[in-house]
Image (tube, rainbow, N blue to C red):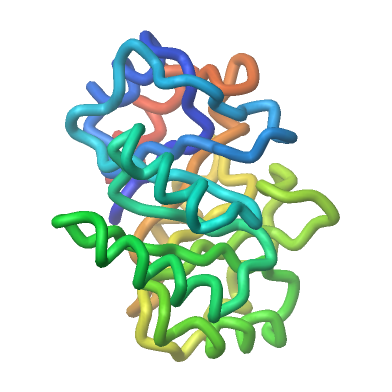
Length: 208
């Protein structure tokens, strides 16, 4: 099971989270987010792959952040169309030697929401299933993971949305052939963009 810690910004905190051995670290490039990152920290993860989170950003802006932050993965969290995803794919493939993966965030409330994935299976590499809410970037609340039993597309997905320290047993009991891992954020913070290392460390040990 892969572990992504999202909403990072502070160099010392990034270093400490990276030392935990997580697989992905997320950086939010949405200016309205309290975890928005506007400049490159003095330390960037060396072990964890770097995920850039964008909301309806232009391909040119995304390409610029891929280059300057050394991103490995782009997570699209807005209303990006399949055509926009394909445009980004073509631009990135033409500019970078390493293939940049694209994840599309899908807001989930019911089984019907999973049908949205069908539009993107040809132009992204995976999905992030977050809780449906009125704002971008998540609400810190969970949805009913049982609805994901209806997901039948071939691409892998991350569980996201309000996962906290008390969810270890629930995660260990969750099974789906496309389940790739979990996305952790606000429930492990002492302040926006500052992760509680002790909470994270304890949680990771419990689920592994």
